[in-house]
Length: 293
Length: 252
Image (tube, rainbow over all chains, first blue to last red; front, side, top):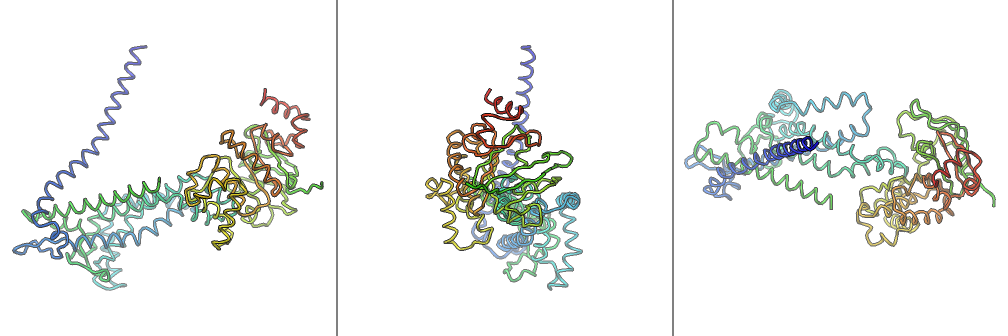
């Protein structure tokens, strides 16, 4: 008896260690990325002058002396992300409401796997779809050469749909049915109960889905690179039919052949991207805190 | 005093898919009185009360025959279900305030039925909270989340919310089963006060509660109405052996 309980205790102890190691792995990975990125990126940023690096509008790595200003890329990332939100968020939230509250069973069993599939499609395939379908479509119907902020926004909007739909749908489903019934019992219609009570009640989950979607849009590289035109030129909002380069595209396009100061500037671009993502996560936690307060 | 009947329940049978939950129920529910439904779990009392405002419509595979007349009109006929639920309010077993402010909880009902004037809404909110005896506790924190209230307060808020659309009838499905004795006492007191303006139907597991507040009591078993009459009578000289067993067994 004593031996057996001791063995059980040991097994529990071993499991605990295993869990701690697994959990630490994630933290260590984040820590390592953080350390190396900042170690390699920050000094370069410092040498170039942080303000000049962040607000410089010229990206001329091959000039002599070279110029490394990443404002066009920062703005480019902001444009395509904002555009993705504009297209993706309303459609995503309405789709989630439909899935959770309106969808007839026979349609649901088709729609649900389809959305899961959408999440699993590699971004290069999205990029290919963008090149052969969206780019010509935008060129013919809106003008420009088709490789544009606008095209990238549509494509990114599509790519963040599964994130927004899945997480929002779960958030809506997690609202206790009693809340919905309370609204129905007051004489509210199904639509009114859903949109005025259930959806607001799921607000924090829906916000989480939007923020994760933003995170995906900011970080997306391959698909954006394939349709955005990638010119490192500072664009104004009304130039949405022109091409632009994002932070991610900047790194992936040039890192292959860059060396020395150029390479350091690209890593510093990565640092800026990383800070962006941290800001998004911080916003997320602040929102959550507000929600629970 | 002349008694008018609010509900006339005629030959009601109800099925959840293949399971028959109500078996040939016939009963009259008088106006401005408190009618209690008692019986062991699964006896159909909650099912019946949910039939009175057609909340059973939400249950998939629910089928009902017979008729339930509200002021002479069959609520299972060609009627506006939302209008019915406005007339027949409901308070649930577990307090279910909406996760929004106290004010918005109460204003939701009237807004649903088209009231937009801020002034009118303010009045309805105050009156409803007063009628549910929770105005004094909430008047300084109307903008605070309803979830910040205690369980008992939340339930009175839910009663106020039900009153906000000026119903004729108030259905209460074990409204105090999740509450402590003090909160329960407050709700019972409140129900007795509301009786003069509303017809109240209450499902309860608590025998003492039924005797304390109800005028009439129906005892249900396995989907059948076994005995129905004045509460006094049911609890002092039950006619049916099963009813007697249940009532005494609970105290035994």
